[in-house]
Image (cartoon, rainbow, N blue to C red):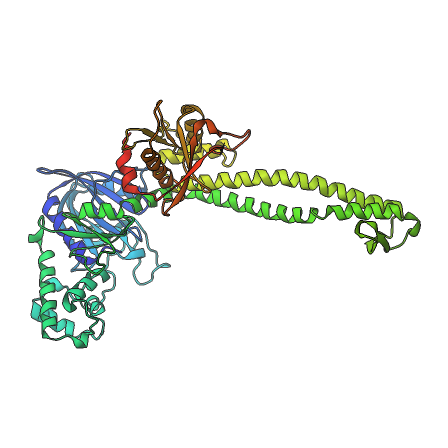
Length: 590
């Protein structure tokens, strides 16, 4: 779900309580549509404020998650540093209950004058934006420029006056008493109670509207016309309660709610208890907005940042896979054609046996086929050739077909190995967690000849990261490779013969090794290592993922095989469901 105006009001209250008077310390732009501002207060230390204009994750929040920043800051980041260096935050404002937040900074301009620079965060789905506004309400710049070609109604370009987006004619429920709120609700024509609530007041998301409607009707399928006085009293009570939650006095005393699916995947969040899902979803309580939003958006943000940075590699892999797939399809067709080559040899044999029945200039001949119990067969002939030459022609075509089949079979084997390798590269790219891992994959593609090294954009290789390390509940050390080259080194060089090797069956994933250290590895450790292998594979979002396991001595690398490609024998298979919480609890921070 998207962050609504009610939740943004709670965030505004938190920011106002903590950050007023704070100084800007550092500014980063980890991705094309998000900014992190580090602010330092006199009494409470430093805070990291995340501003995101991502279409799916737009928000403002305190964050404790670390982010990897680009080596060269983008232009918008440089402009923010220029205008907000050491600026003081003097106000945090919200546009009524709309999803628009203003951060007012007091700073000194180039002429030495004291000026106000405002950062406007607009949370509006794909139209979300971060806009820097200066004197006379003029736009200095924005993280997403909107030209007149894109929007003739509301372009956003440097030098233009900042204007609010078109309103929706909804009320700010924090500005009215319960009598006026009930009157406003009575004027809404919609029969569905939750939809009427959303149409009446600003900042109410579907989940919040449904929870209010549930509290009003007690779960009965009532329409708006069926509400009686007791329902109106309940509605007034719910709205009054919501007003208290959204007031500045509630800061530090709030409980916020996040609903997650059974696989711990976050689904929705809001400012009041979530009861509409019953026991189907797991509800977690939080005391501050930053922790909740980190839990809800954190993994998605990390994946989005890496998607942006890995876009060029993904395009390369897609293009190469399409080419390989087309080649394989063409060769399979040629193999089908060459499968009939025995007929060509038989034609040659038959023509040689019945030369006396033919003469030059014939276009075809009907002969007794001794390969099929004397049945007659008609064989096409080239009118320009003699009977002997026609027979030799079929023998030549037979030899060509046989040679082609052998060559095409070899080419198809190589192509299928390349297809499997590219598939593994795709899986590794989408699972990358850092720029360092991405650069290691880029270097591997260069070494394998899939990518040319650019003289303009040299890859600066940082210190190579070690494999991921885990400790099972039984105390056994488990290693998991980050890329194909590391998989090879872990499996073929670092591991010993009686260590345990694990890999997902039939689809790409990391190599996982349990260090035996001369001990017998218990089933519980094998199961936990299998969960790690399943989590770091394409089966991460699946259940009952098959994971093969065997001793290292049973794993070999074929001659000429691509990085990460091995064969193994004498194995068993475990079926496990990936569990992120378990994996993180076993992981050793490096």
